[in-house]
Picture (cartoon, rainbow, N blue to C red):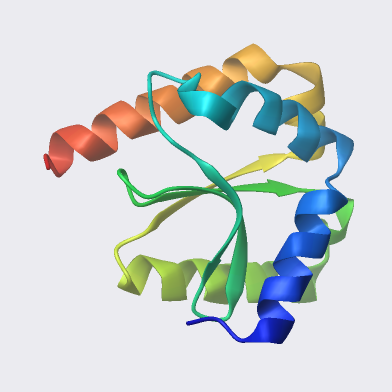
Amino acid sequence: MPDAQLRTKARTLRNNQTPAERLLWSRLRSRQLSGYKFRRQHIIDSYILDFYCCQAHLAIEVDGGQHADAEKLKLDDARTAHLETRGIRVIRFWNDEVLNDLDHVLTEIDAVLIETLADNPA
């Protein structure tokens, strides 16, 4: 079970979403995307995932410009590698993608959901 400090941080992140996260959440919540349930700021191990679909073992990360830094890219790669060892697929979008082309982002997420669930039927 996640420790109290991590849960508090996840709660703070839920209450202080970026505009891109808020926009994407408005289209993922309440099973709006092909009936899949997503959680936001979901904790797995020591990581807080922006969005997570348990059914498809799919994490969606929405990144700002700070993630373009070489050191941050290394950390993101290590995080992705760790999550993949847990059977979780990670897809990433830039804030600008979400804010400027949400329909395309949703189409990509939907395609990954279909592909993932076809590869791993329940």
